[in-house]
Structure formats: C-alpha cells, structure tokens
Image (cartoon, rainbow, N blue to C red; front, top):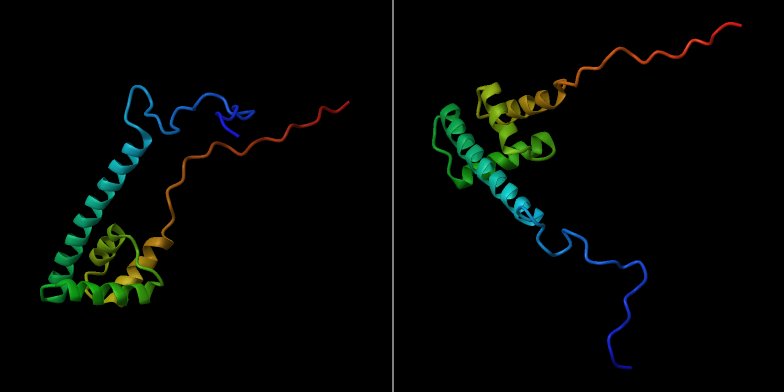
Length: 131
C-alpha cells in the first residue's frame, strides 16, 4: 500500500486560475477583494449621507440607535432593507425622514422602467417564393 497514486484519467495539468496566479495580472481573488473593498467604501459613504439627510429632514442628529430604528422601520415597510444608495435616493426623493414615505419612494424606484438597449426592427420572416 505505499507509493504515489497514478494520475486519474481526465486530470490534465493544472488549469490557470486554479490556485496559481495567472501570468500578467492580479488574480481573480485579488480583483474580487478589491471590488468588495470598493463596495464597502461606497456603502459607508452612502450610510453617512443617509445619516446627514435623516438629520436634515428629521431635525435632529441620528446616532447608531436612531439608524437601527430607522433601518428596522424601513425594512418592515419595504419587506427588506434596500441597498444604501437606493435609500439615499429615496430620502432625497421623499424629502422626509418618515420610513413610510421613504418606503414609497423605494417602491417607486423599483417600479421605474429600466433603460433597455435599442432594438432593431423586428426580424422579418422569410416570404415563401410563389411558384
């Protein structure tokens, strides 16, 4: 029972991206981690903007407990807590600190038609040649 096992059939040499860094650039893991860090930074900026807007429209500073209360109320109103950038836009749209009004603006955001790529004319079906 000793010795190395023979290679399994179908197992060729290691493929790029399977543990070894690819030549000529950062690995996909590095890229993924960078994208996550960028997203976290944007989310933190949006949350700071949320606090500022809620303080502006609500008339008082919003501490961590106030953000927690707001987030729970908004999640209850909308069914799930939307991404921070959508909440920021909804607060601006509603010009309010009321979770119900902000929830209405969130729902309106998701109902808006999305821009679609321009489509050419509909495909023409071939016309059979009459004999």
